[in-house]
Length: 177
Image 1 (tube, rainbow, N blue to C red):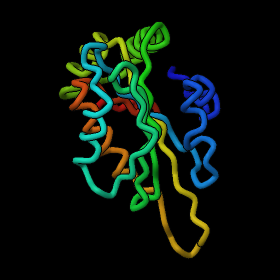
Image 2 (image 1 turned 135 degrees about the vertical axis):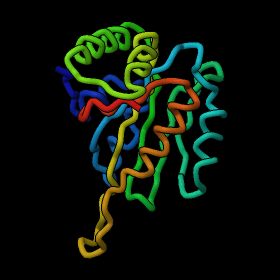
Image 3 (image 1 turned 90 degrees about the horizontal axis):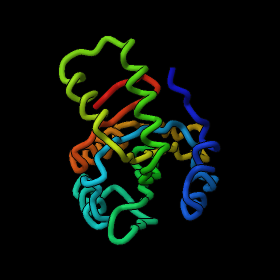
């Protein structure tokens, strides 16, 4: 079965620059991690990722955009209207390949339908990943009723899956998108 790492375990694996992101912001609480698997050659530039997110809505607040030789490395996206935020980091190497091999073993026992077979085949061809850390914004006023809305996360995930020609994964539900 898939082993879900805690937010702190995941944070420790992040590059040093990312560790001072939302994991250390007292205004946010870590909720879940989602993944987007892609081929190395489909890694976009940092500017292209930023443009892609900005095109979704002016309601997103983008910060901490980092690149490696012009290619996307990491970004922080806040969505105050959804009471949420995301840290997104690019990962490649043995960790990703081992993770994909484990996923392929796990998906052998799951009944797939529709386009999921094509997505699984594409997943097997991937060699890089975006880790999408989802956070809930804390509310000072309990009566305010601000609740975490996953809508922003889903829009960003969909856009990055399309941009990278990759496969998204919700490891909790084992849903491919």
